[in-house]
Image: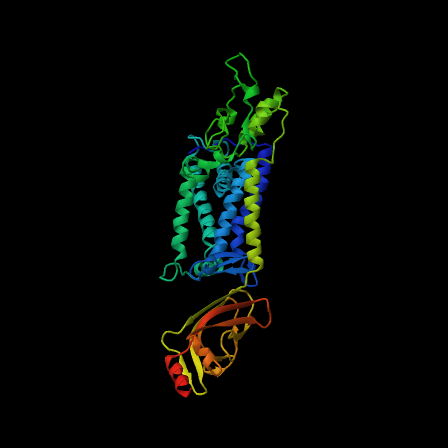
Length: 451
């Protein structure tokens, strides 16, 4: 594991500002509420995803698909523009590495990362790392379980029971996070992160990235002989968290953290020169007066695709009806004839209110290919309204009773009807289903005999 030297500078200050925003977000989001419900949570047992006051269910999985496509295209688009900025500025792996390093320097001071550090302080450091890992894992699990209920379980000592599974998840992720931060770190970025494998393919000579100015710097100083501007101080290697030499060119292990920029800047400033390592496009190294071309075929392509996906997702969200309806003919009760040449069909209905408000649903039925209108019966009584509490699910049986069937209706045994559910308090919430309506065989024979 590489523990890089602490290097203050402009880039470090900007990254600290970014981290001071991201850390509270990572740790604090699961605790926030909106209308008594979590601001964000993937509730797997309940099969619901809460996000900014909206509730999504598995039947709306296409939103997850759109989200993943948006995340992927965003990665492509911003990498083609500004390189591996995600890794160095926002990736949880980097954020936690900086957090663990801060505690390391706080406890060990200048001995952090050195073999001759006091043993007692080393133990204290690892205990603090385990504590941070525990808190971080608790925050991570809180994205899937209610953190307030988890705290209640801790207070009440309800940590070991068949119904309490979150402690095992927290323990697993605590061990994983501690192992990662204490023994792996940059090895994950270099060998396991899939982004490292294809980020160079997404970039070209116009992508802004942490770049070494080899035109000025090479050949490097050899002994007292000064040829290029690089004095071979190797500070860029010393401060690199992945242990690479940026002077060797673009590498998959570079996370674009900018520590080498802060290391080179003061050294070159002593000689009255600009830093050899800066945020540059590769083309700017060889053509110093050129500016970055932000509009290029790949950035236009990624941008257009990203805009198309975001527009599609926005349209679907705007037209989304937060009501799930499933209607299936009841196979246990066959269609039957009742006096007056009427027919009853039975259906099993499942309704799910995926809003944070109660719904008062009015049920309407249309019979476009039957001569007479039909009636909705709930519990064998004429009724067409149902109360559905917020964020709730219900299932029941409904009866559709047709009007008097005439000879024209018998030309087709199978008909279709439309059942519509409308919230009386919010007419925009309307869902309709086209379902089969079957005429029994005995009705066909009865009417034929009358004729």
